[in-house]
Length: 457
Image (cartoon, rainbow, N blue to C red; front, side, top):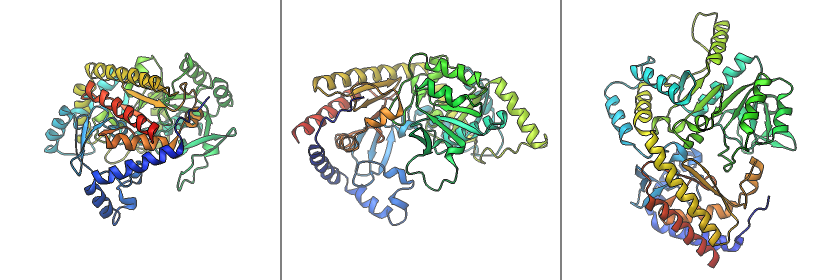
């Protein structure tokens, strides 16, 4: 793969310095809040990764609605990050906001189900095709529980993931492939899990490596996004998922599909759009319209095996499994999820989102062609990404090789100063139901202006 080093580091550094000065001039209140926050918050933010932006200090948000937000200084932004998918259907979608107000006076959590739970379970089964469902607080939790169930029903302790994957902070999934060996992902703190013992890592789209990894018959589950999204977008080769499903069944391995990001594909996710057949299906982040919530569904066969494992482990006396948290499936989240599934995650909303994503993809490709930039554009439904390489990558390693950190940070900062925000982790862009054609055109214009500035820096 040829990686495009289009602009000199000197030009990038000069523009970055100017953009940092501009950001500081525009955001004095955020600067003051950041200074105060450092006195009581580790790293100056409530979670340390909130500081992973190219800004000199954290941007503080005052309000967010639809496809827009305002910072503490009153500066307005078009939001194409959307909480890194958590607000994929827009900030405070009206039906969800109404549902939250309704539930606020009726109790938040009781450790008992409401009628909403019945409706949600039926809708999840209809929409995604798996008959039985459980609700968790986050996608990390849902993935962790799915893996534990897979180990319980198969009697195997190893899992398989793809190089460059991200499935939340599940310890045994934070792994990389180095010289054919499974190693911890750089930066992983405080983990005592022996990654090499619990996890096998192979490259996405490498069928021979997948088959070899499954051959010993000791893999409980393959945990996969249907298209990789967290190391740069990597699409599956034609026929890859058919082979993945055939091989997992052949070797008695469960297939877990994590759709937390690829739900951008359509109302039934990538799974329904491409007729995948997972044993377990995981979805988090946007499923309750931005309220913390996640779900996982299982086939009838998997559910039967899960029940057998539970009864055997607990002697049939109680439901303890070491899975679940007190606030899982709380009444607040369930009512919000019902409203989101019924009124927000609709066919019409997706039609609008995908149409605008296609408009954005076309305009970005034209922009790069006109500026003779050897960059590629990838789209998964309402999700678009541009990468600093001429051809779309086929593996996580190829996607990582296309990273150009200083250029990426410069572009992101310049876009912020022009009233546009995209996801800070590579060049990911999301369209929500309230995004407009004008918003898309403004993003492209801001990026074009940034490219011109880089050329003249």
